[in-house]
Structure formats: structure tokens, C-alpha cells
Length: 345
Image 1 (cartoon, one colour):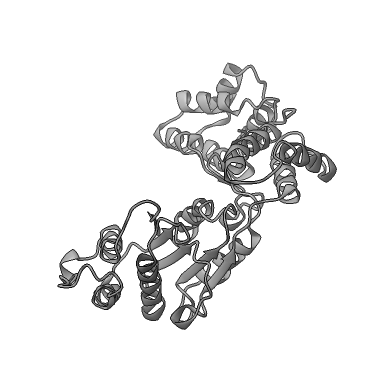
Image 2: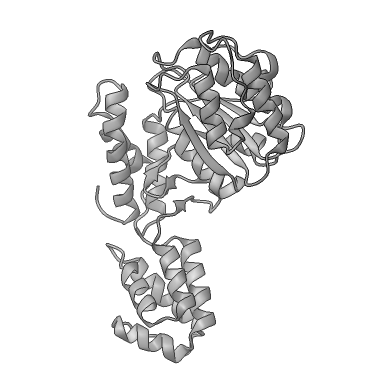
């Protein structure tokens, strides 16, 4: 993919600080590009990068290869960073990302809003729990990609996913798994004489509560997934809810919890938590995504053309079940990448 605006600006800044105009001219000549002599180093670097970045297909990789080959250690580290997959947001803000590395994240404005309003400015009065609802197929687990991205990019937190599907976890095993992921002291878990009684979880929850105020950095974002899956027994679902209630009650500085697939009415300690109703993108959402992807490249397209591409993509599926979603997603990503490269889909 071509370099984004912020990436171009970063590379221009580094070249202008590390190279003279003469040095840049030699590299430009290696790329068979002639610089105008009256430009500053920054202006010349911008002209060179923009020229190759806007080709169809983009040739920004050739510029990165040249800078890496001829640059010092600082420039090589910058090139390495630019070569790694990153998120892309039309606004440059992590919250507005539509590509997470090579993974498309389409629409989900309500989820973005909930994360922004509830999680990004934590205080003793803001919730530490998010519940993502929805019937299959609707993209609840797809939310994990965005939550992981926001944990890294905005919260400075370690994202952890605890899937429950087909694990056969008992309540104790779920709490043990949470302790392990959060590096809590497993010796604080009480040995229960009546372990077979799955619904008796108070000692486990109290042990968890007792550990929360003692947590130290880094922060964690724990995502408990598959709460609506038939393979998860009710007692284990109740335990996951009790863990989230504990987090909401204590509101420890270093922990957020997300429940994916908890579809029953929320009461008690969780009644004020953030909630999102997950939904799979429709053609209108995908059209906006395509238009934004094309706008990032050398050949922007209008809303009508973007909708045409989206309708064509969805026309191949009579019903959007889980199998169709699995097949549609990589095709959506492939088409979006072509649009960003300025290619005909």
C-alpha cells in the first residue's frame, strides 16, 4: 500500500534532519529522478516521495529501499517502522481506523463512540466494563480486532482475549484462566471442598476482588468472548458476569473488561456499563469504507461508484450467515486494497 500522509511527513522530517541536499540528490539519481535545485531538503524529499507514492501501482517501496540502503542507523530504523503493517484512519486518529494492519474494520460507529466516551478518559466515576451484544452472525468477535487496536493505540493497555467456546471451563477454571492472564497470585484462590457444585462461586470472586486493588501496571484490557455460545455452561457465564461486576465495583486503575455475546438484560452492578449492539456491515457501510480507501490513494471515487462496488460484493450472497461473512471479509479487504492502490477492482 502507498505511504499515508502522516507516514510521508515522518519520512520527510527524518530525511531533512539526517541528509544534505547533495546526499538526497544522489539517492534521487539512483531512482532516476531529478530534483529541482532551488528546493530545501524537506521540499525535495516531499517531492521525491510523493512522486513515487502516487504511481499506479505505487512505488513507495523503491524509495524506502533506497533510503534504507544509503541511510544511517536512524533512517534505517524509521524505514523498518514504516514497512511494518500499521493502522490506517482517514483522520489520522486511532479511534477512526478503518484498516488494522491488513484487516478491514468497517463501520461500528456506536462501538467507537462507546470506547471514546467510556474508556479513553478513565476516572473513578467512569465504567470499566463494556458489553457487546448481538445474535449470530453480527460481528461480536470481530469487535476484538478493534478493541485490541484501541488497547495498544489509545489506552496503552495489554489486550487479552479469553475465549470460552468449546473449552468446557467450570467456574473455577474460568477464574484460574483470568488469574493467569492477568498475572495475579494463583495462591490466593481458595481450595473449594464442594468443587463439583458449579454455582458456588463467591469465594472465587472474593479472591479476585482482593487482587484488583493490588494490580500494578501495565494496564490490561480483558475480553471474555463466546458468552452466548451453546458450549458454555450457564454457571460459567454467571462467573464471567460476576468477574465483570467485580471490576465495575472496584474500578481498579489497571483493568478494563469486555463481555462479548452477553445478550440477556443487564441488572445489578452492571446496569450502568457501556453497551454496544453489534451488527455486520451492510452495503451502505461498505460503500463508505470503499470511498475512504480510494480517497487515500491516487484515484478517489465518488459515493455512487463506491456503492456500485459494495452492491456487487453483496450480490454474491443470498443470505449473510456465518459462512458468507467468513468468505465476504477477505474479498472486501482485497477490493479495498485495490482501491487504495488506485487499481480497477
